[in-house]
Image (cartoon, rainbow, N blue to C red):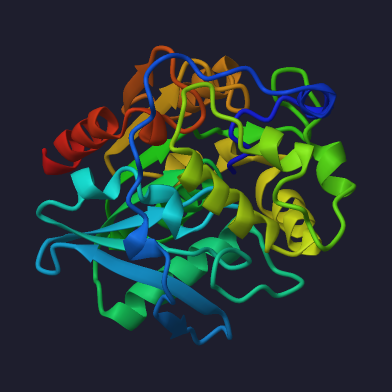
Length: 302
């Protein structure tokens, strides 16, 4: 899930009313997206899903699967892969419905999405991997580790939850504007700028590409994923199945995954390591990629 601090219609209306205030001093670091911008390899999975993916980093390194958030794609990881890929083989996917993967009308439960990951690893003949997921991708990572523990080495959950009620984000309803989406989606609309807002400045060219790709996702898929794969689920009942060593990461300024989400997940996974970054939001690996990559790398190398 990746609304990047979407704060409801209030932000969208503010964007319509006038110009956005200038970013704080200090230009954001440019993000090199060249590895993500071309045509990706596509795996034709036995369940009829066509899953786009990239093979980055060290081809002889330990496999690490990177799973992006809602309405994102593999490029989600571009800010952090230069720092994560040293000594690691990075398998970076476009979840079904996203990026260059197939976009069926149905079947977007967390189990569907996790099964795609399992089938991709089968196709690549990868027996065991570390799994890193962000937001929606963290729910997929949880599910993969629960159902295929023998294929899971370690798990990193970024901006995650043990279950989220519809519309629960800083008291705002972020579902209503999604329900109102119609094709074609305008990447430069007030809604899309609000959806991709970051409290810490991020390379505007990178954000523009993310908005453009997000707008290519059919409105029906936006709705199917959020209702089938994200909201109204109680993950607490299956979290005890997650036995792999786990690192939990949040930014304390995340307005989607709230303190209640943090407390619920920490309570459900008392053995997990926890990192909370002060001043960062829903995408801490965009805002401070070197720092977050160092913490992930240290955890995975233990």
